[in-house]
Length: 207
Image (cartoon, helix red, strand yellow):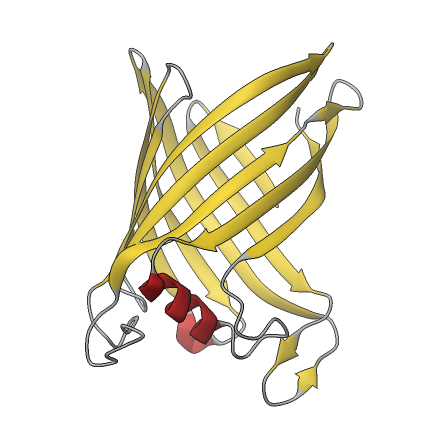
């Protein structure tokens, strides 16, 4: 991932390489670059509220599933920093995705803080062809979808470089969401799972 920014405007390029790609037809595959996302955004503040709006282009390994999205987010500078984000897919998966999250930093020592977060999401597709209901495939899916708990700690290495260990737990928020997520994962190595624990370590450089 790489980001350049100037006076509130920014451009981000993000890519994903799956080191142990799995699919239901061929089993385990060699390393594969599976997705490239491009985001253009603008951020500003009005009093205690910070806003961000932008456009995202998702280029996935199957070009038929490439899609585009616009979004708007607002964060209130108060206890737990509540953040509302609204995403609108304007292409292949037409629909709405809305999240509400909170976060809190716990001082550990010196420059180190334990950053904790929690988020809930609601997903509503426009049509069944975009994202179908798991019970009735003729209907478009719409329900509370997923929750995410997170923990991370940014560790400065020097003035420009930081290392950040991260841990996440995601889970369905409704029975429809559980069925939908299980169906989506039938082609993966974690078949029929709807909740996941995952994490990693990021290395960032800013100047």
